[in-house]
Length: 129
Image (cartoon, rainbow, N blue to C red; front, side):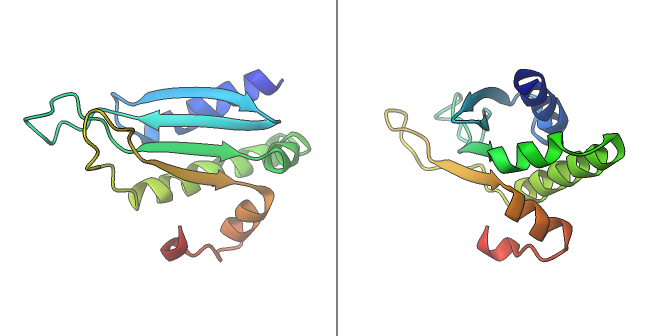
């Protein structure tokens, strides 16, 4: 079920990102990890320049909450996750100043039971994201 659920999360959030986004997913210590980046094509001297990386971590407690819900509750939960990631993406600056021989910075987005409860109650503060 875990692999199917991870594939579901990837399919759920893929439309949020640019069409050329490179998305890789894996399981790590009972968490789901999704890495995302894309070519940003904003520097003619560096046509292969990539965006800053995004690492979405869906914590085990959020996964367990999802699995313990019935189908209508799962749809609400999934929608909340998609809206939260969309909101983070809207506040995300993909540009980076990394030279080609340096690693690109990674922005980490954590989805846990606590974060989802705060988000779903309307109390999430994006100025701290």
